[in-house]
Length: 265
Image (cartoon, rainbow, N blue to C red):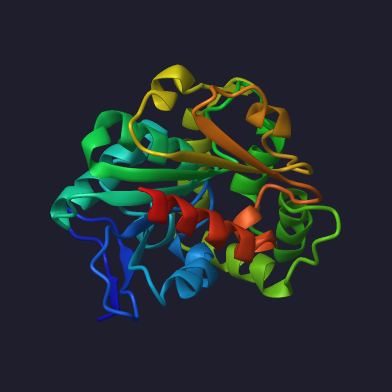
């Protein structure tokens, strides 16, 4: 049964979509990026639903988790995600993370490798020091729909046609009390001056689960070169003409890569 769950003391707000075929395989847990929410995974969850249960969550300070007790960087968010996995009594999960959510997924896997069946990381944070800190800070502070539209265009490939409702919905979410201030605070934690903190990629590559990294050649938030020369056990999939939002720009291909990991693990 589909479950749209609000935040509790032990679980983040989540959307739980079961597999249509009744499969009880390890579920796929989807973790959004900075400034997003669980709704950004709607198309991916629909595509996964014929054969796989999927769960999307709102990270602390995002979506319906604005009032989460502790707001902060990827490490803080990873603790909340792991707490949710434990509260849901999930023995194993396939983790999918985008941008900041990619760093969160990696940190969860490093903390509890025995619980992770696979990792699929979309333009993940923490794979190199470079980050478009100016864009992210402007995005965190934006509340006007026209300004939001201009900023959001920078997150996509040059030929992608931005749906009008995305900017409108994002601006509306910032109108919630404390939303913009919370995002600014999170930005201050994930950006160290004009760079970002990096993950221990060698330790990540040593994890026993399959790992895929997905990037676009026109990513203007985190440069594509962060997908180059990764440890050999991490598979890199780079899409030409795609920006920082591969799950929205090439959802069919992203779904296929997620399922490849889920089948192999």
